[in-house]
Amino acid sequence: MKLFNILLFCVALNQIQAQDWANLTRYSLENKTLLTSEQTIEAVFFGNSITEGWPQFSPTFFKEHNFIGRGIGGQTTPQLLLRFRQDVLGLRPKKVILLAGINDIAQNTGPINLNAIMDNIISMAELASANDVEMILCSVLPVNSFPWRPEIIPTQMVIELNQKINAYAQKMNLVYVDYYIHMANTEKGLKDYLGYDTVHPNKAGYEVMEKVLLTYLK
Image (cartoon, rainbow, N blue to C red; front, top):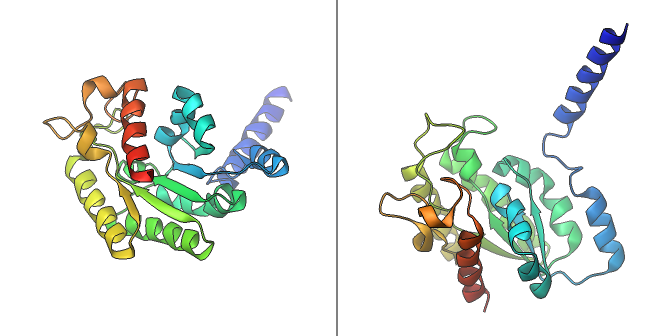
């Protein structure tokens, strides 16, 4: 009987997780608290694990500039698009800083081509514009291998996606923040001293990103 109950619990848990594919519950309570406080938000940082880890490495940077982090590890652009209204627009920030696309290239939620990735990024940019939120588009960081998907070689796809993001930003007169050029090594991957693996920045990596970002924001 106990085993049967455990099995039922596991099935129910899987169903709940499947229903919240975009992880909409992740920041729901924090968002309510933030809105109640009526805090002025200069910018929401929106993206995947790279964005999620940033406030943990640099809490002072976020506090001093009235920045809010809304990253979720492993997420792809379709998941971000689903929670954009809740975790960005609902907070009424002045700006949204979008760093996304690498998990799409890693096929975290299945195969997807670069044009489809861009479609999701463009949809988020259009939502921001329609709600008077300034969209700041960021380059994907240099990556030439995935620890969790060694069969995928992302090097050239990262370069091409960044070209597409930059072209769209120029077309729409949006700010494009180029982290890639400051963080790439000679093999077009992440410089060793800037990351704790081939994808994710360490403290030194985030410090470089902060300096680059503030230059564009000024």
